[in-house]
Amino acid sequence: MSQFLYQYFLKRTNLDHVFPVGPEEDPYFEEIPPEELHFYQRKGAKRKRKLPSVIPKHDLDILNSVKRKAYRLDLQLSICGLRLGWAGIIGLIPWIGDVISLMFALQILHAAQRIEGGLPPSLQSKMIANIALDFGLGLIPLLGDFCNILYKCNSRNFILLEKYLVQKHGGIPVKAHSAEKSKKASDFPNDGANHKGVSNVPNSAPNGSEKNQHSVQNSV
Image 1 (tube, rainbow, N blue to C red):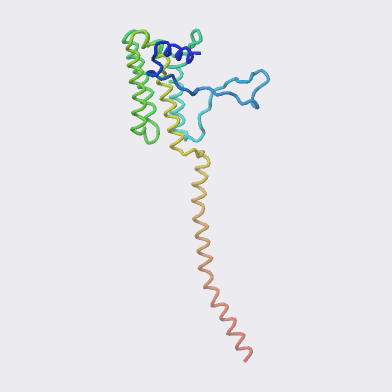
Image 2 (tube, one colour):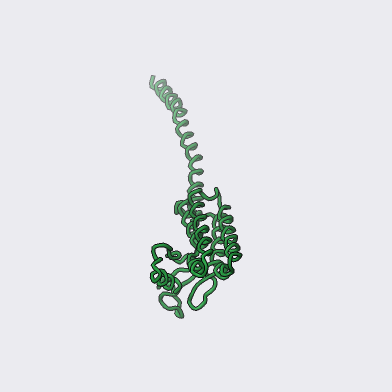
């Protein structure tokens, strides 16, 4: 509902090409497949979206923490069909509210930086740009607060982080990845056994030659 209100407002004010609408995809909920619906659920019902299992536990815990904080700041509340979070409420306080919302957004960025290997500079720049744009919009009286509520910079940064982690780990499940490593490690003893088998072949040659010598002597 909030997305439609936002789009209608921007079109009426000719700002639809200036301010982008919030995240196109729902980062927190997904539609339940028809075969998994219970008898009391209608088609189109939603459930909490699970985080990708391809991400290792350390990074997955950080991503889950970023997800919870971003949801609280951007979408936890619903007022007259308008989804907003605590950052939108706090941001209504002139100047001080925008600074507090900025600090919360920077805390999420700091949490995201704790992933294994840290954030790449390009991704960090995108996340900082989202925070800066959100802060700049909030400084505009009334109009800026409305755009600030619907821009949802924290949810945008959560989506960026999730996509990066999935791409980083190549879409290979963690269990399969560890199994592949153990399989490679188990190949070394087999190679050693094969080498031993090859080395035993020359040792059998003298035994064969001795048998031939005995047979020649007996025939003589």
